[in-house]
Amino acid sequence: MNQQNSKKDGGAGASVKAEMAALGAAVFDPPRVLGLMADWGVKDSWFADEMARDFFNVLFGAFTAGETIDELIAVEKMRILRGHEGAEAVEAAMEAAVVPSHAAHYLGLVRDMWFNRSAKANALDMCDALSKGDTDRKLVVAEAVNGLTSLLEFAGREKEKTPEQVREAVIQEWEAAADGKCSAMGAPWPMMEANALTMGMVPGLHIVAARPSVGKTVFEGYTARNLLRQGWRVARVCLDMAPKELLARDLVNVSGVSLGKLKTGQMTPSERGKVRTVQRAMRTWADREHLITARTSKEIVAKLRAIVAKHGAEKMVVTLDYIQLVDMDAEDRIVLNDNSRVARASSRFKAFSLATGVPMVVLSQLSRGTEKEDRMPQLSDLRDSGSIEQDASTVAFLYPCQKVAKNWMAAKGLSDFKQLEIRPIVWDLLKGQNSATGRAGLRQFGKYFKFEPADLFDANMSNPMDSDFGYDFGMARAPFGDAPDLNRYVIAQHPKGAIWMFEKEWFDLIYATSEEGDRYEPVGSGVGVERSLMEMQRIRDEVKAKRAAAANKAPKEERLI
Image 1 (cartoon, helix red, strand yellow):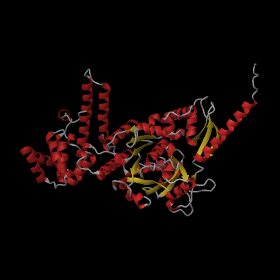
Image 2 (tube, one colour):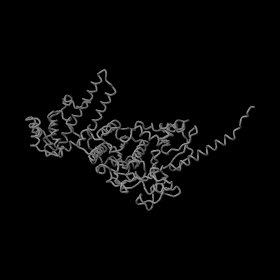
Image 3 (cartoon, rainbow, N blue to C red):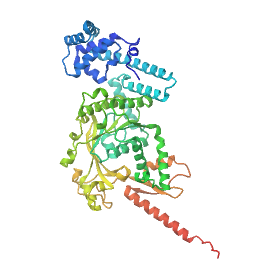
């Protein structure tokens, strides 16, 4: 939509005095006021008056170029651009800025009037387009929605609470938690150790970084599904994978039917039924899951603000995979390199999260230093920008536990880490804004895009990379062994005879969403994927043997000669 049309921008609500006051304040205090304009994302289209637009471009252009700005320089630049009238405009602006320290107030007025003009222009454009007979109505409405959504970032901010009001709200939340009415912790991580360390995800950026092929996207799905299953709203920003493939992974993860079987048409009737059963369970959160494919940080934040405006920010989390794939906005392409691009995105996402109270789980890549030097990752290994570490509330790394992996590989006669069906992964918290640092163990099942909590324990293991122990079912509390309180599985039988295993939390949801006559009933249980698979096979063999015995005992019909 054409929101910069000069006729529509210069409506009756425009106030030249407010615009000139804001620009005059910028001449009095350039670093502070022009820096504020940059933070707010001010553009020349915010100014209804043509002279004010030119004056803004002169000041902001000099600011971004690192040039000195004062009254004499501003007068000379405007004289060159607009003649005598330009020079007079500078003097008028400085007179209008009665109190330069009120620049934020002047800018707020300019923003609000620009917002109103732009929203009105958007609506008028839509009406004009719809009045034409050969117009694609869906396209017109979609463009109008996109235009209005892009304005949400500038829709104004809530009035700030006093410190006493904030303290009272915090204490009330603690008291409600003590009375058992709610939890005062943030959004839950899928691992118990992570929640114990961080007390959940609070508003801010929560960085999870890893090298390629370690499981960043798998971890995003692990986190998102855990939140959705517990009633949270999740906006998933998909930059590294098409939404179709991302949701296919979710179905594979919960159903336990491999993607190879599903895509090559080899699934059995019972596997088909299991996938449909899982789909029904996932419908319970259909209105709480949002997929975002916008590429630039400004577009992403605009889409997120639209979701918050419609549904509210309560019990909402954003996941983003991954920050190095965020594109530059059009106005940034000339002046920003890769580090600055990531820094701008990180800053914008943090501002959104703190303003709305919505935590963001942001995936990031690590540099190659950890592989080249064969060492554990450090905060300095975050790729492309040190600002990620600065902006983040928490920073955690995912990396393989090499010593344990080598033991597992040796036990199975394998030579490549990627050949392991089950891989030992460490979730390592290196920065915690409200917590100490620490680690959690995970087992990754690549075939099913699945993480499972593991018992990361060794009395002498101050560094998980130094562990000489492997995973042994017979050894109590082995590193990356089963966590009995978490890794519970239900083995259940369908009325038609199929026997499958489900994670305990998922089985409860699946059971509740299945109709009688099409409901899996529990017939056994297990701890951990491998042991549960063995138990499922034992039950299947037992049922098969009973059926065979019953068939042999059945009376045979006499054959007629």
